[in-house]
Length: 490
Image (cartoon, rainbow, N blue to C red; front, side):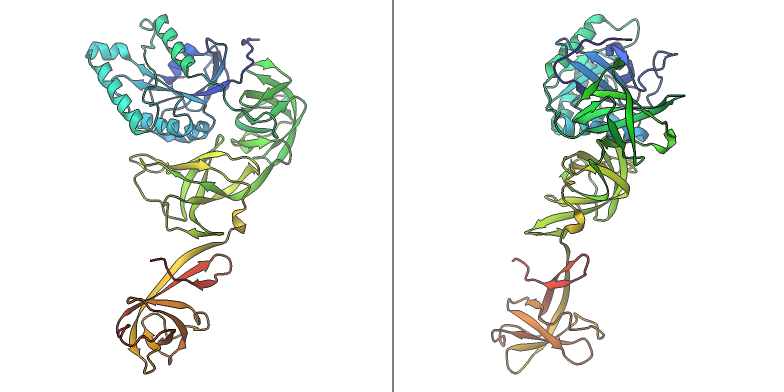
């Protein structure tokens, strides 16, 4: 059984990112001391193409354990990267020295900007090929990388390590330089070891005659041997029969650490999907959740309320309808689309399991987009708030005009706002505004053609003119469809 130096400090989760064929998995193999879930192919020694998240580990020069998360670089596999990014403490982004920042490099850097912007190391790969082509290429690529990092609000002073990863060119000095750069970004993360267990499960596989092994990252609390865990995607509970961390048998795994555990009886792997799981009773099933919104400026398209997007949270990516809201005292106004500052209600296509007392970060994306940045906005869930109990309204307005001022000078007959069959009992007492300023009250219908009488508290003869435009502003509340008139702020 392999052994890893024990550490008194919490380990760090490090995303290995970059465009397809930039050298991510080759780099990971160079620095990793042990491969774990989906990390390396035993027969060939290395996967030729990263199709899923691969987990391995190394130890920094100060004895800190680093969990390396090798992420796929193909655009069609971005779901896996999105899911993993929410647990990143640090990131190593591999960039081809000749090609520079490519489309997937940019997307991965966007994720870094949201989850670990000051904990980044850049590895410039294929430097031997770049130098053979033109000695100036490397410096020019580094200059463009610095410019790109600054534009994305990522640490523009992040270490850039020049490397050539293939056999025959790779040198030990390169590895030492990289380890020094990693050490410069190592820090003590904040972990919650006291709260109820919460774990993001990423893989599962059956062991014949024993049960099912699941692997994941503990986000909160402590996972203990012989304890019971609720597998939310199955809506079932299982007892932990054996527990390992990096292939070592242990009695418990603390927050921030990787865990592999055996449960029985086994279950069909096809029934399972990546999800949050935890102590029995701590996760609640919901199909809607309120969340904060932090727009991503590189996403150039508009996002309308009630449109759909991909939402990634703790190794899970789901489709959800987005409804954007803005605080309006004790109520919320539904917006036509994303217009910061705002919040969002996600309405998921299938139930998601969340703890009620834990703010979980998420990333929203439009993965079906073909060009440009696909990440729309990010933020954190607010599961302690029930969206169903929010008082939400949408603004409605109608336009009409004054047909004539009545002889008393305090009322007017208006038209153009309602149909003949309108039930004026709904609108009686509603306030209307005139272009010239006076505010009136709808008294009721005038005849059967849709005309109506408006009364004023002041004499309008000489102030309000015939054919003058009038406006009715209303709030329509969800649930009961109740209409309330209001006077817009000037």
